[in-house]
Image (cartoon, rainbow, N blue to C red; front, top):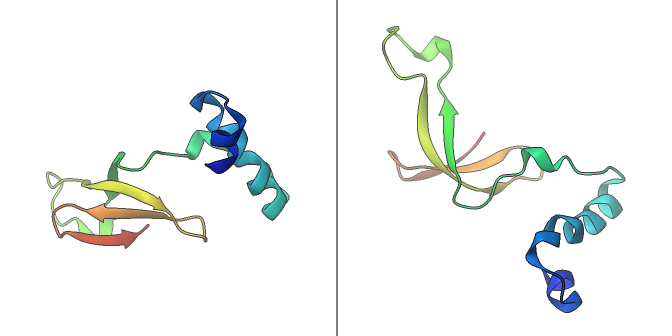
Length: 86
């Protein structure tokens, strides 16, 4: 983030630096509790309709890549080696 680099503030102020553009563009304050870092371990829920048997897994593993502009997540499915949006 250029704002943070130019200010010489510690990295712990990253969220503060991002709030300024987010609030300007959306008019809303961001909920930082839902943000996850790049590379974060993610679990993709398998809907009940697609699980045929009780003992089958309820989720698949993935890796967090980022966010889409429509409030969804971009996840890399490690088993299929494919990027999906959830």
